[in-house]
Structure formats: structure tokens, C-alpha cells
Amino acid sequence: MLKKVYRLRKRRDFRRTYQKGKILKTRYFVLYWRPNGLKNYRIGFSVSKKLGSAVIRNRVKRQLREVCRRKAAAFVPGFDYIFIARFGIKETSPALLELEVAKAAAKPGLKTEVEK
Image 1: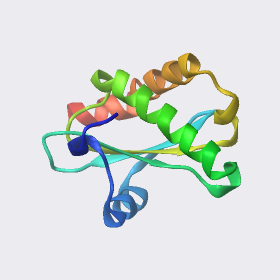
Image 2 (image 1 turned 90 degrees about the horizontal axis):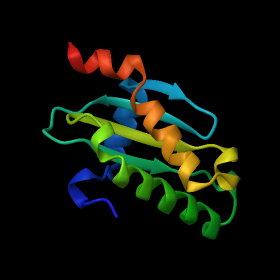
Image 3 (image 1 turned 60 degrees about the horizontal axis):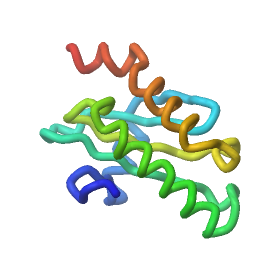
């Protein structure tokens, strides 16, 4: 479970990240990120009702949370991240999801923005 300081919870923070953030699309999720002006990163999750029942949506969120907890070193402090689940994520193994999150965090657009 992610600690409370690492969770993105408020609607205004989600909206701000959607509107002013950068986007990365992968096969299993869409990742939005933007600087937050804080010393730590925050991660939010969004799973549409189109993906399935509440049981499936909550399972997907739990998997994403656990992967993000394991890959905490991949996230740059001072940024907000939002993961939006896509349809293929339901059948994905946690190991493959962990690999996708690591690849997404290592994308050049995210790293170069931090170096500025």
C-alpha cells in the first residue's frame, strides 16, 4: 500500500494534472505527469466503469498500487503521476505490469524534464 503522502486524492489535483500535464500512452495504461512543487511524488489511479465491475476495477487499482510501491525508485520526486487503466490491463500479469511501469518511468521525456 502506498503511504498517504504519495497518493494523489483531490479532484483539483487530478484536473490540474490532466490539463497541464504531459501524456505517455502504453498498451496497458495512459500516464499523465506534471511538476507539483512538493518534495515528494504523488500517484493517482483512474479506472473506468467500462473496464468492468467494481471487483475488477478495484483489483486493477490494487495491482497498479502494488507495482508503483515496488517501483518507487523509478518515480521522480516533485511530480504528480496519474495512471489511467486501459482494457488490456485486466489480463496482464503483475510481472508484465511491473515491467511496463518501469519502462514508462524511464521514457526520455520524463527524465529530460527533471534535468531542466
